[in-house]
Amino acid sequence: MRILFIITILTLFACNTQTVSISKEYKDKQKQSINRLLDNWHKAAADADLENYFNKMSQDAVYLGTDASERWTKDEFYKFCKPYFDKSSAWNFKSSNRHIYFSDDMKIAWFEETLDTWMGKCRGSGILVFKDYNWKIKHYNLAVAVPNDIVKDYVKLLKKN
Image (cartoon, one colour):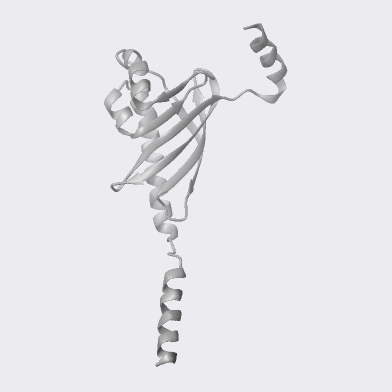
């Protein structure tokens, strides 16, 4: 009886410590889904589609803009963006290079992307959450990419302000 008890305990322990293996196909499918979401998010801005743009963000999303003072909750960012989206186009960012990563349980993803913008090359990075069978942008950070060979000139410009 004691042996049976030990075997049962060891079996339960072994079952609880096994990790779930995520297939490459599933990860690839989720990457495609995230790529589509982010491409459509950028397109919604270019098309001035306010509702479509903000529907891709989680309710508690945060957007960090290029200015150090720009930290927007979703509601604050909506109010800021509305006048731009009321025109025929807000902004047009195109991703030219994107990398996507996942947590082990595939419920959180993070990414970085190089963007072609009216400001030149920029860098976007963010965090997405998988909830109710959909990915949503929870955090996004937009940064102007300053080439190393002109950083000193850039810093001088900043000191003048």
